[in-house]
Length: 95
Image (cartoon, rainbow, N blue to C red; front, side):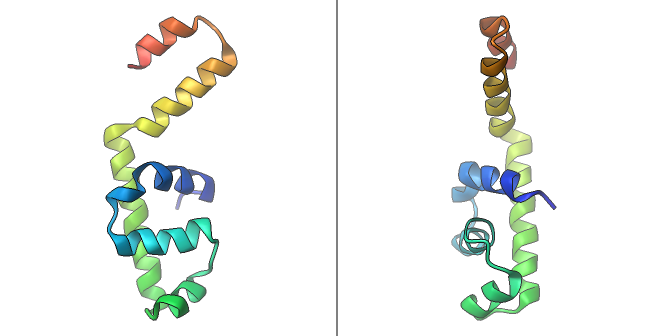
């Protein structure tokens, strides 16, 4: 499973592409840092259903990123800006 930082990053970028229920569960899990049990109590669903929804949602987010690669490209750009080495050439090579 992805670490929380990467998961939050993907959720910020692609979260709106998930169902409302997936968004709700991931928001509680990633951004509000609730446990599976706390989420299941709040949403009145089983802990297993929460875990399944999280796994499916993360898989969807990873799938979106593998196609679009926005986060990867953005992180490359940030790294280039920090390195400040022939920036314009390297930016052109990314896009």
